[in-house]
Length: 555
Image 1: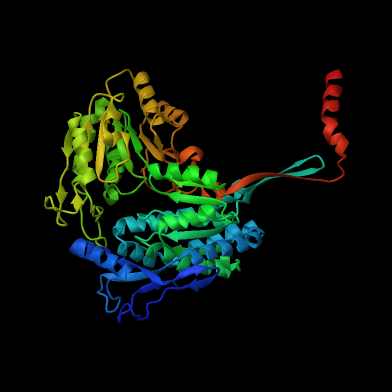
Image 2: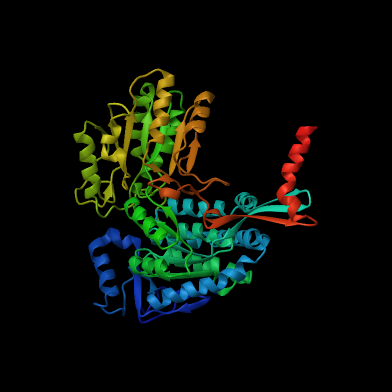
């Protein structure tokens, strides 16, 4: 497995663009067609012309010679034969790789990978920025990847993969064994970080096939071919342990479902599509691992540190709300509602649009904003009050109906928790900077706390939830009684990464029928019990326990 990108002049450009071929079985495989990557700044300058050029290039309607600098990369488009070849390579690698000791497969691999991520951190950040991620959020994603492969997390993975015991003349172990061939379909809004998350499945002894999304393939291809593949090669991993291809989602997912070689499919997408895909996976005998929509709740109790809570809640607007793990709604105690709204209004004004490479920019373009205005109007029609925002703006922040940025928007939802989900922005995930703040109806503290907990547990989604409170009894109640969601944080950043804890996964419409916190190393493996005995008589093993029990009772 070797890096396969080039910066050489090609027929596509005399100045050279970054090029990736498919990575299959340790070899690079060309394709007859290309997927082209546009620079994120070009979308701000002229989104229509830039996207039109990309479509025409990919359909062969314009020449690929002498491309403008707005085209920064291209990735080979895999056909059905390449897709099937990748699955065959992965299947061939699974057996040998699963026999590699965990101290190499987990510890050494994770250590070397983290070191390479640190060495390539600036390049990783640059690739993310070119794909449109604001610089600050690109750095956040890279730091999150470092936690996934940090020493604390690696130690946790090892502890979960094997436990050993001695029982008389038996050596007993409870261990996790790899499922086999894992296929990953990352989302178009965060393919690089999602691809790295999927790489942890390799540490379980699986082989991995990743489909880089056509809308943003560069980051996934870069991190897999320039960072992960060289580490696997250094460890002597079989060449098919990692495979990376780019292609249309429907044909590739169909090929995975139809192939007898595939064991697990990790699917990122909308809840509606994901639940349907779950049914297809089960029918095909595949394990579905779903990463779907989030609709995260933040609870703010009456004694909360409001300044810190407002900082965390403002994370809702990062990336223009186009991140699955941000706060999507707030439930606030009526005693502190007004003060919290004032703080949120002040902080929302600081979140500014701009070009991805600029320091401090956190808003990203929203090229289609009709759903935002429809959802906002629904809230207002149902009695919500506009607290701040609500307009499209230009790059400099000037309000303009033709602007491709949206102001961070807060709406106040009155009427209590029972009716709150009549508002679409509360009931469903929003993927834009619109934050409903729900003020709870006055009630005694014990009743109020019950309502807060019930509101979270009755959410149809279950990615992340967080809470802000100072009273230890309230904190204990929140921690002890909230069951919905893959991650719960108290008095902390909602999106910040921590060692040991998962970055993805959840319950309900977030993770499907089998949803839980997603550690891919665990989700793509299964529990197996093992006993190795010396000198044990089988007849005594079957009947001896009863005889010993009766003898003890007689004594």
